[in-house]
Amino acid sequence: MNSPELYINIEDNRWEESVKDIDPLSKQAATTAFDDLQKQIPAYLSQANKPIIINLTLSNDETVHQLNKDYRGMDKPTNVLSFANIDDPDFEQDSTLFEEIELGDIIVAYETMKREAKEKNISLSDHYLHLLVHGILHLLGYDHQTDEEADIMEAHEIKILEKLNISNPYME
Image: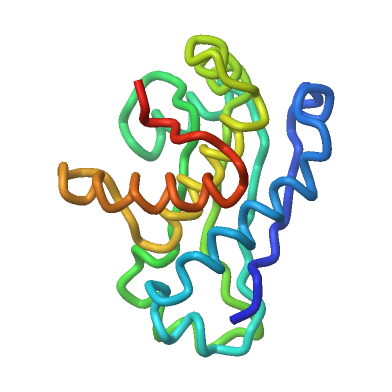
């Protein structure tokens, strides 16, 4: 299966100032996630022989707050939002109609991410990559609504992040 193509939109200039080499780091994280998850990715995606697209927006609390309010009914910013096309019941059928497969959108809020990294005493780039991997897992259908789902998703995150030389983000 091909590595995903990231279309990166940087809406807030603080991203480029704060996370060195953000483009290659982001692409490496996406490739590592897909390589690790190859056996869990639905066959209609992994065998499609089409480019797989992820739209990544590096934004800020104001934008993410509004999206979170509009689409999730939560009147506050959050660190990362994912809008997964795989959640659409027609996604598998629709994926045959186009030259590329668009998995969905990931939007990361700069201020929330930065605050969390400081609170956890981890580097901004490590926390960013964790949030990106988390978002990619959502785009592939993973969730954390139940303890069992959370355990599965976190196990994947830990394994992928380890391959990126990032410590387990769930260790206290």
